[in-house]
Length: 180
Image (cartoon, rainbow, N blue to C red; front, top):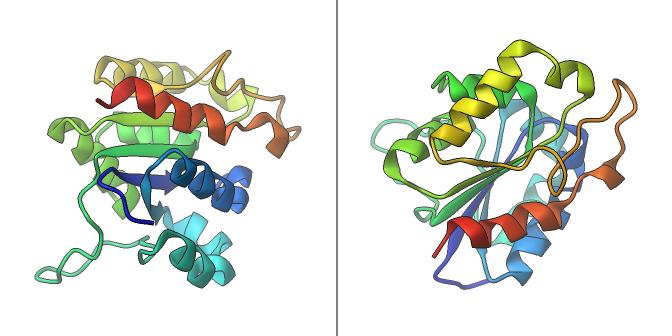
């Protein structure tokens, strides 16, 4: 797909990442040129699908930092959607930890002023941890649209999550509220 609006879809290792092709198709239908970036764990989960995902995006799927001096293989993003965003990623992101490519990109994006949307996927026990609430507040204060609660993602009881509760549509729709 050719478009002037480039979206980095950053997917973490949570059950909805197994349906990331739905997120890609939803964003493409909204006019985005989608580049997929995976956390290392998500890349392991989707290992067998990586060639197909690269084909449907038209870009290599990235999950690791490039070596110094290597060219960037992805165009610069106009916006970033982190979906599904795990509690681990949200907590590390809020602390500025960049120990993976996915975290490095989204941590840097705050400072660069790239529009950011995070659509979490986690359970109620994870959401109840005091660090999580602080992390969400930090990200929101930094300009990240964190779609937590009604209209976004409502945490499910532990070990009772379903893919039906995850709305790729909500994540993509929120991009319109953060981009010109």
